[in-house]
Image (cartoon, rainbow, N blue to C red; front, side):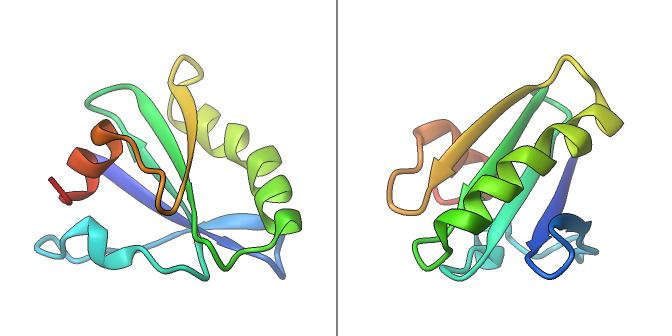
Length: 97
């Protein structure tokens, strides 16, 4: 099961997205957004940052991410990826591979 959150700069926090079941996760990726993916099946949390997000947004989202992770499971591994530098594991998660 995968949960997706979007960072809201005005709130300085993440907001959970309601995603339709058949929507591929890669369609959520947007260069102006920071998204957080909680992958309960693999005990991982991914912070994905688009190329058009500010360093301030990335900094604040990195501080807020552990709180979201901890609401799911404190043992989950938190990993950051930037647009254009996604790992194979992240690409598999969102359906790019």
